[in-house]
Image 1 (tube, one colour):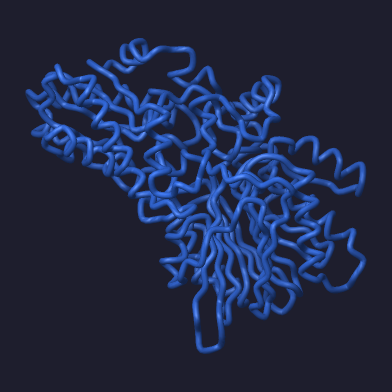
Image 2 (tube, helix red, strand yellow):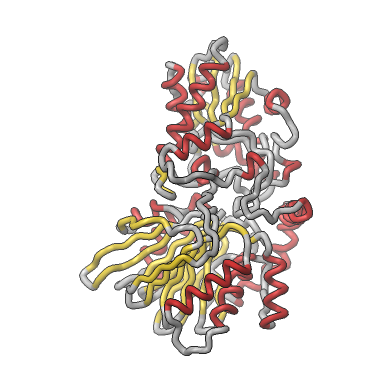
Length: 504
């Protein structure tokens, strides 16, 4: 999962890009990058690490210019090498820099096509570089020295025809402006906004509305599935539908886990959707677990806080913060390496024993993926003196890998794959386990925007909306996502860093 921002301004954009990436840090802590255009030159800084660590004063000073884009990354394709940090750029045609959030499901096929048709070399294993070259190739077919909006939209339409998967893209074209577009199913989010200044209107696009809020931009709307937006360097905005058969199928896991609660995505308040999840799960618990003597509801911070509060309200039970989170430890779900993931749980959470001792507690989490963290947290609750520990998941059983930009484990590493609830309950060591139903989850999110008729729910039901996912593809993806494969690629790619960074 990644986060992207792009700004066409009337003033230098380096600080606004930095601030936007900072509030999207939850979408990826592996690497960060910013590129700007200044005097018809791309100014780039990218490296592994958090936003605050990647950009020092000397880097910010070099990132001059009134137009730019930024990216935070957790690797879902390729390796976690610094060389694969985004943005990527190509020098022809015009000079293009691009960043993207998502995953191409036919990246290898497109890479081969680009070499055969245009002798384009892709230097990394990142599908973002494939997407960049696909876009550059389509623009190259236009022989004019200056691109019209229609020429850009034609190129994007051809990109849509060539690539498959889930993707939200922002790109810079030197001498022209900023382009943003979204896959035809609208799987990955992209929102746009504007800000009025003394020198005129500035525009911004980002993965989540919270980035616009932070930078003082007013949200205009979401970029629609298949739509492209082109903003010239002078601030003139154009948009056009570029997909042949767009459908509205946003990823429901954004609302379950990834997005910040203060964001609005596809006209759905993330906070409100999580409140609804809590209400519906609370009603299910009241119906199915009426016989249980639960004393207190405790969330596993922080994504589940809103759902847990409303579960407690539905049940008429006390809501307590029984765990204190160390905010300076990365999320365990998106930490590379199962070994690091296991070690990080106790560094990340500490139990307040007074809330557990002698009580029957209901722990609430947003979801259960591998089950490793859930089991360790249940152990912590028992060590703190809990009498019985029940567990509720605000999302249904995650049984299938994600192929659209979320670094889910392979199916064999998912605790719910091929298992029933009773077995999972024993595996994590709970006294009882209950999941939200998929029907209720969809209803909880759709309640905020009834115009969305379908969500991308493949991790729960194994239905992939692009209709191109085979078992062979899933096997290949599993191999690429293994910890050993990633560590090998990191060593191989480490030497490529200085190909991309200007200065140190």
